[in-house]
Image (cartoon, rainbow, N blue to C red):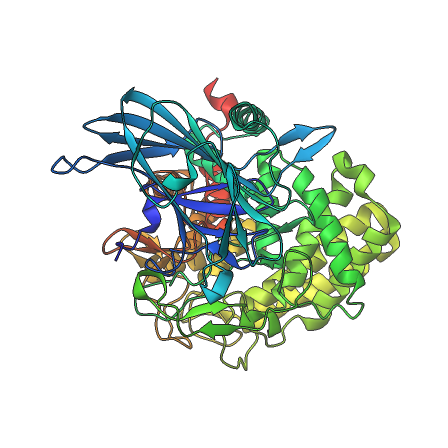
Length: 599
């Protein structure tokens, strides 16, 4: 039985249509086709024995040392390179999903390209392609052609086209004397000669990513980490509709034995707001336009604005009811494996504030004049009215507690205040007759928080109105400018959170027990929130000290999961996690000196 792979061993590839995780062993261990929230074609990540895999590895002679591998991204790209070394020689594999501009639009086929290139000696390789029929784990029927294999049973044609002898695709070792190619396609098959096609797609894809990175703003500090986070975030965008997924995977546990295994392959409105904020800092704006269109479509279908917090990438909620796959062993044997997410049925009031914050720049930044319309302004008003209406009422909150909540969540009320506050600024410019009304609403919600959520005994704002527990999400009071920078309540709240929720330099979301007991691992985003809060309070030296420690969390390839076990410095939770990469980008911009201070 193959050994389970660690998250630190994985690389992400994709093209804003689908994504895949490739291990440093050369195995594609996770890939859902034709889009992020589809059933998996390769799923060894959740069943290392029978989950299906697409492997390219070196073959060693009997008695020889085992093969060694090194892998990483080609600079400033989402093209993954794996070097395989044996006593016989060395070869490399380039893995990517094509993406580039063609005929005035982006070409992003549902296609996975694997290019094998000899480097030294006469290396021998093994190729094994064993897709599975989704959650059933049944083997598809193989229909062999002259230079391809069709895998029957999917909703569309799945084909592997190759110039490697088909007899070798079951794992038989063969000498790699010249470049060879493997192209897995969903839908439209390849009809062109492979070598020229793969070389052209590689060249154009590299050019696209290199140009995209050059167009990014980056801070002087943590440049490599910010660039990789930016590239990873881009791969979480589903370009067809504008949806942005929270993560590539499902059911990677937050910590061993916790049973906190969730399906994150969907679009959370909250996560999308944070991703858009990070992309705005990077100077990438087309994703905002697509997300606005996605949001308008969602709201058009729900005139009462009873918005679920998450959606499939096509904007529907069909099939999101959570179910458990009892027969699946799970990542590293950690069960259960879940499909769908019960949070779709929750009430989360903070999302109204986050949507308003995502859309408000359209009406305050003249670069987006073309995106303004009467309809989008009315939408912003309706969302704000909804936020004002629900402010201070109980909900499941940002952490999506599954038990019944009888008290209002302070973070949710905070985001409702942010909606009214930012809408007042928009109204100053576009609806001056309404601005004062929004300011009064913001003041009422502000007073509600300061009167009911401030706990003098804690010396901090509490997680719920009238409560006594701490919540790291309230670090955002500083970045949202809820109180003046010199207000002692803001400083003591940040200090109390950074002290009481910290463990070996990393922050927990909260300490109190929830539906599954007390958390035992740090939530990576929270430490980045602390960096932002300290920077917003003018405590730059402290912010940079925390950031310097936190920048050590990413995997060797610069990717981040959701959670971090400080005891053994191991990542847990769904991977890669958009939330965590957003946090890194925001923190780096907040704590880094400006270029003008250095040049």
